Length: 176
Image (cartoon, helix red, strand yellow):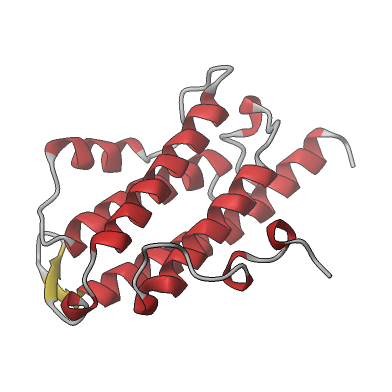
């Protein structure tokens, strides 16, 4: 029998305090956090901007994951983006400035955004899930559940790309 920690998050049971209809969103975000933290443990900062075959860098994905999660949750709350959020968006353009603690800071930021997302999920009444929300400057119509689901889907999509790129650049750097 597997220990609960070795199971994928969705098999570990409900996330305390998250409404039943939002459990899949919470599970996806927690799974992404687990996988991202494991994959980037001891990741060399010098490899953050590497773009093998022109794909997006690990550094880009790390910034983008946190930034988009933050922005989508803002829209789900029916709020507009702040100047700080716009600045973060514009800062997602590579290359990143690199420091010895760059990876840890970027991972910590993503972890913070996942924690904020979980808090928001817990505070989201299921009765609000079909409420219309505008996305972006054009206020393209969506719904609370549409935005929250897309936040999870977008996170898992970019996580997959990050994981492949991280493995690729590590293997090239190691001469494999």
